[in-house]
Length: 157
Length: 102
Image 1 (cartoon, each protein chain N blue to C red):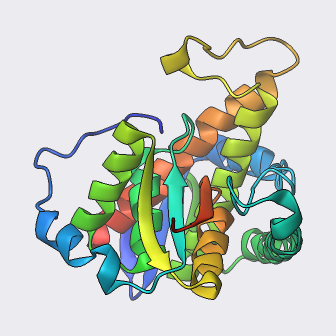
Image 2 (cartoon, each protein chain N blue to C red; image 1 turned 180 degrees about the vertical axis):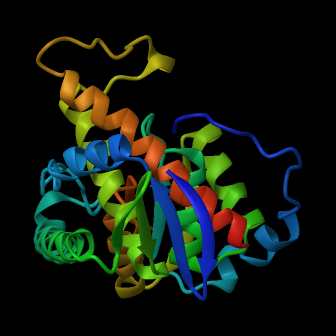
């Protein structure tokens, strides 16, 4: 996935048939982070923060529903994803770039949770097996796609 | 955070940090981002730039603070503003919380 050019505020990427297939496969996992994963506070007493926690979970769930709807619309139309001789042209506006970054990171962090929160620095490396291979692959692919989007934003600046 | 590329030059944000002294900010709640081994360093920097409208140098300073020290205090705000920032950071799946300013 490479940035070809900027047209106005839009980013135009070339995406190979294999990358497109992988992107669609990982996006099927969204949303992956459980609603209760994020906490409002580490120190405020649970009773005190219960209402805030509920509001947070509702807000995040609403955002994810909105992301999913927008994502499906974005990848469904010819306007955004156009077939070419050697793959596809993916055209994304700034807000769509942000939305895709959020979605990819939800899948990346969610996959990391499914994998048991591995941490190389603490001597807990990822241990791929037949059961978790899909999430291991998703973790890596999401990181690659995120870096492609972030590189494109960096080039713009 | 997942280590990727370290910036070649450390940003000079000392003065800015000093100007954000406790007495200059609305007391109440701290917005804190915590380290984790999954979020990419470039991604965290980008999110800080977007959510707080910070220049890249300041965003990188706080990202490195999270990476090296385990956490970074990103803002000291009223409860409502702190909630807003925490919601924004968590919508990007960063590990962020709000804590009472002792």
